[in-house]
Length: 147
Image (tube, rainbow, N blue to C red):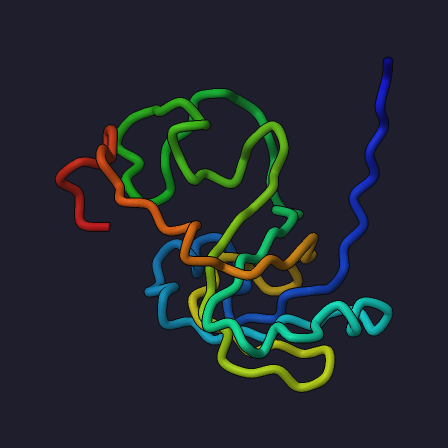
């Protein structure tokens, strides 16, 4: 049985990072951005104001998948398996980021802590819940690094 899926953006992310290099060299946790939800999805934002954090699911529209081994953006000293990194060049360039929700004005969300570039297509928004929190046991090759 063949199943076909189509992903349609629900909005666009406006932020100060214009390039991957700008984003990589920044303190992304402090970055303020605006999420512009397309008007036809605005009703879906009902009740979102009550959450302090939300999960953004986004499309890495500037990604160029080439290899299953990549040099991580923040610690590029050696090649790593793409699935053991946060590298944007992956087979399915889907991004996932937890951000702090600062405010909502109609179809615009102001958030803090983005790690994408300006113009990134937004695929979905989900509330960040207490059950999403996990104690991290092992950090693999990142153990001992200043994250």
